[in-house]
Amino acid sequence: MKKIVMPIGKKLFLSHFLAVLLVSGSIGTYFYLSAYESLLHSLKSRLQSSAAMISQALDARDLSPINHQEDQSLPVYRETLGLLRSIKKTNPDIAFLYLMRQEGNRVFFVVDSDETRAQALPGREYKQTIPALWEGFSRPAVDDKIFEDDWGAFMSGYAPLKNGNGAYLVGLDMRADEVQRKFQRLQISGLLSLVASVLLALLFSRWLSSHFKRPIKQLVSRCSAIAEGKIGEKMELRTGDELDHLIKAFNTMTEHLEDSRDRNRWAQSALKKGQEELERRVEERTRELQGVNDQLREEITRRQKTEEALARVARSDPLTGLMNRRAMMYWFQYQLKHYQRNRIPFAVLLCDIDHFKQVNDTYGHAVGDLVLRDMAEFLKESLRSQDLLARWGGEEFLILLPDTDEAGGAVVAEKIRSRIEKELFRDGSREFRLSLSFGVAAYQPEQSADDCIKAADAAMYRAKNSGRNRVEMANGPKPGHSPSSSREEAETSLSLNSSESSILRQAGAV
Image (cartoon, rainbow, N blue to C red):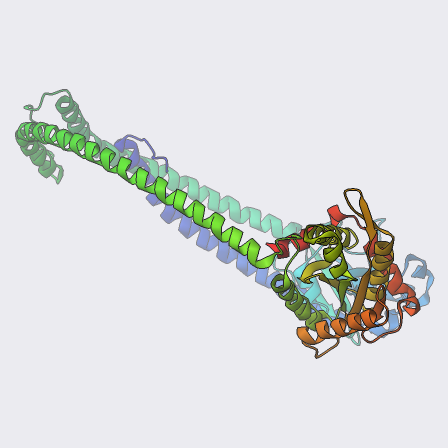
């Protein structure tokens, strides 16, 4: 925070000046506010009572046909307009008299007594937000202050119309010119009083500041001499007040200052030596601690890498890089909770490579491992970004399809099956073809995760027992009989490439 640099004479002058000004200003403000509140209360009472009386002379049921500018020709509009203008002429305080209708959060004019071109025609929206106006639809209300709008500066009173059910009100505008003139006279009176108080404060403050400033100047001069090394000089001044004690204390201070200066010099020398020794010890200790910290950081880094590797091993299949059974069960439980909240279906596909044992027996286990890796890549490329793929065990793969029913899952499985049987697998110069058998099951209410997977597993074994290279559904019809909507959804899922489909599966694998 920036400090105010100011001579003490000016501070004394300003302190007394502001004190007198505060007292006089407070008194003037009190009388001004009292007069203001009295005028405002009188004006608000007249407006509120006038609006309440006029509202009882009008019936809101007669105004329902008046909604647009074209309704000016209606007899009820002309009669109501004539009545408002007659009431306005009987009261010279009324500037404008008008009726309004509320529609939701909007307010529209119905009838306006204005006889100039600025008259608000039926259906014109009043966009200015005035709290008392909104209150006037339910009970008599009046503005707390003067508001300005397109028609001038006014203070207005409002009251709900008879039989209006809170949708109609009558508004009464009173010109603020006379009130403003009275307020201006009050302001001029207060300003003259303030000017007189300022002049009195100036004279009184100047006299007091000069009385205190002379001895203070001498004290400042002696302090400057001490700063230049002239410690032995004393002050010879009498003021007859508390400043005499200050001068005496100042002279006593100069007597002991020389001794204090010598002691300070000795203490500073000793402190400097202590600081140098402390800095040396701190530097040595810092080097030792830095070495220990470096060793700790290296150890933490090694442990983090080990933990990350263990986490990957725990959740991923080392051969294919896919999620393992444990990671897939985690995401299955997540999808299960999502279903319980939103009832969005999901399907499980369990597939097995047909005659995989023959591949191992014919070409060797190295080729079998290559087939498993290639099959994993092919399945990943055939799925959507939100679909999940895991190696379930051996040559079995499990696919979790969110937002997919059983028929849609069967279409996805059939597309993958038909593509696999056309795919040519190679091991050097040797070529061979493979096929997949699929079991499809959609999650059913009240099922557990194991129940749903068992249903897909049972359907897969039916596919195996029915000749392999086919798709079997746990509950629904054949894939060819699936609804078109599910088939189109599956078509979309199969059209996505591998760069779009790996984000969620990689997150699960980690």
